[in-house]
Image 1 (cartoon, rainbow, N blue to C red):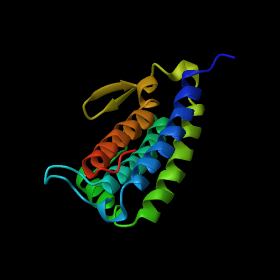
Image 2: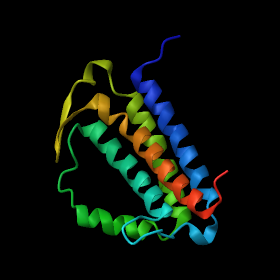
Image 3: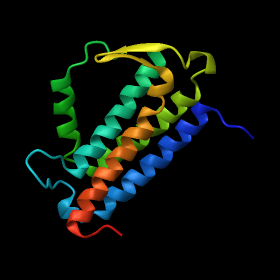
Length: 154
C-alpha cells in the first residue's frame, strides 16, 4: 500500500522522538547538562529545543504563517528554563511530537507546495513537514557524539 509524504514524516517524527530520548537517556545522569566546550550545547538543551520547535511547527502547519511576534531572546529564555527539568522536557517532547505528527497527517496533498514566509525566505510545506524528523534526528546525532566522547555510546 503506498504511503503519503505526510504519513511518512508523521511516523518518522514519532520514531525520531523515541530515538532522541533513547540517546539522551544513554548519557550518565550527571552528564546530561554537560557541555564539552564553551561553544557547544548540552544534551538536555538540544532535547528541549526539539520539544519546543515541534510545538512551533504545529502552529505553522495550522496557520500557514511564521509565529507572529516571534522573539528569539524569549525563546532562548524559555528553552533554558525548560532545560532545567528533564521530566518537563520529556512531557513537552511527548505532547508536541504527538501534536506535530497529527498536524502533519492533516496537511492535504494539494497544500504541500504552499510557501510559508520564514525569516530566511519562503519554505514549502513539503519541507516544513520534514523538519521535526530532521531536527530530532540531527540532535540525536549530536547527543550520540557527546556519548561517544564520554565512552558510553553502545
